[in-house]
Image (cartoon, rainbow, N blue to C red; front, side):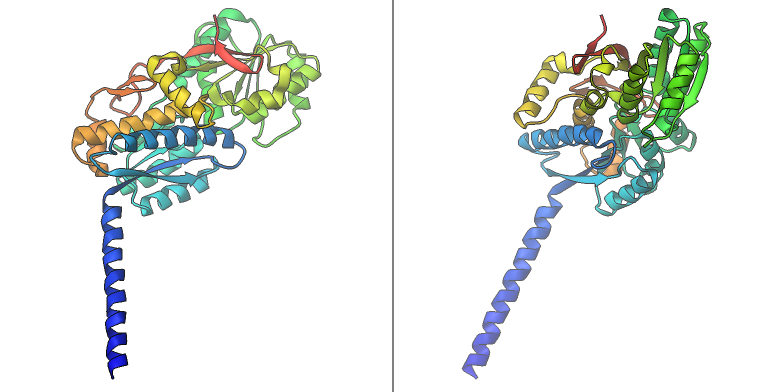
Length: 377
């Protein structure tokens, strides 16, 4: 009888300890604030996902080092969409199920556009560091959605710069795109700006993402006698197209968007990419705030290039919005983002317009030389 009683007491003690541990764990979770980051962490565009993740991880570490958001420790929840629209919807639903307060992402416009519907239904703010297709915010605004934002510019701003540049410097220009939402959009905006500046394209061609042989397209470009080729799409196909063009004797200058802003663009194209031009916002790495983040990323063994600083900036915006609202509830963050106030970020001050776009975005021309890129003088 004594042994039985002693066993019951021990069992009760164990259960009580387990209950206390569970309560402690629940209390700890209640003090955490979950923020999501969604992008192509694997797949063909994984180099961009790596840029995003590097910026996200450093931003969260820096936020937590300063005491978190409203005293709550930030926990980063990653979602890999592989730049696939269907996977992006699945990732968005998963992050909503994890009860994130906000999401930084997605990267590809073809992912952000369908994912935005999920975030709207869940009331979760989404701030993309990279999706530039105008349809993302135009369609959201037309539907009355409040949750969609971006810290980057739009294709109509980016395409305006490239289109005017092409019209000012060349007489025969071809346009090639990869049929993606991003590639098609930026190519079309470039074409419209070029036409408005008085230059008509001599050829428009499309390729498929994942293609590897562009001999037929290169032959058409040569037959058209083009001086320049505008490419709308991502780095892998761009690198292959440029390398094969040089191999087949096409000397035309290639101009692209920041879809080629990845180290593996040069790795694929090699020296054939020398002199390739691209549009991107003014380089934030040279500012005082930018230099500090660059050095911190390097200390972590991460590249500070591409969209790393834009991802970092998106988390800064979310943190400042929550602090301004005095609440980390998604609805409160959305309200603060919509309030018209400026946010101080590593890429400069950011303020959102009624659609969730950055007010007065800026783009400049860059040139790839010797395996790296710099603003064109």
